[in-house]
Image (cartoon, rainbow, N blue to C red; front, side, top):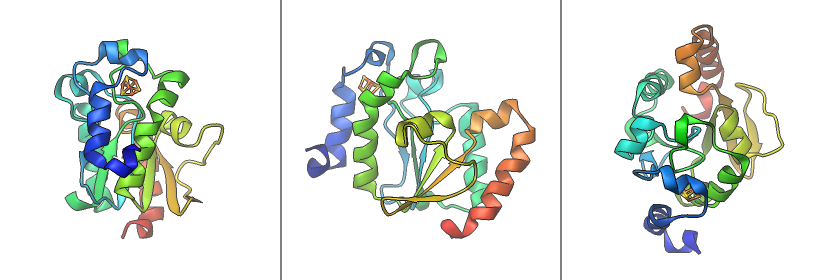
Length: 181
Ligand code: SF4
């Protein structure tokens, strides 16, 4: 139903959603940022404190890392969109629970169907758990799924705390450049 009605309907449904307990800690719903016709669709984990205040995904330090990563990938503004597995901020910045991820998944899937990206980049294990529950993808190794290419990369926040991952992430990107070029 949401897909038939279009992206604006999905956004409106997200704004008024009380399907899981995370709505209680939400100041703003964090729906997505980027192009409405993306080649690459990034999925992160959950909105943090700054995202909750602004309604913009990847707004803080991790956002700056994501910007650098996108620049290194050579993507232009029209090429990408980013969202999270859940659209409301989990208290204490904890990971969203399996139940919360599942409650929010229809919104994520509607975004994917409506925006129709060629490539989905899962930023870390929570995105993987949401998008392909029960599966373990190899880091940096693309797989085909329902007509799209899925690639698991490190979450930008992981690059802040583990600097050795920066070079590995760059190698993953270099190896897969032809996917989005
Ligand atoms: S996280 Fe998703 S499912 Fe939970 S209340 Fe927010 S929009 Fe609804």
